[in-house]
Length: 112
Image (cartoon, rainbow, N blue to C red):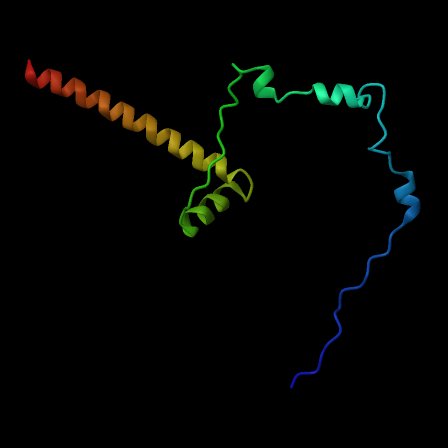
């Protein structure tokens, strides 16, 4: 049997002087005063206030090969890989549109 080893992780110490000197993020300032309960209840989702505003993105769940995800993460440096995947899909759609337009032109030329 192996002997139990104590964890090498130590409980971090907190420097309370640094904590006390930090700006208080939960205290409102004059540029961003705290909302009253009545004001808070009047808030609406952005899509209700500006229904014509198209955010341009939709959250989905998709299963991709691990190799594909890893390749895009490596290409993006770990951040922004979803944007690269989106750009690749967009270029694919554009290429498909161009191919279809070219096929239509060729059909018209062949039939005349």
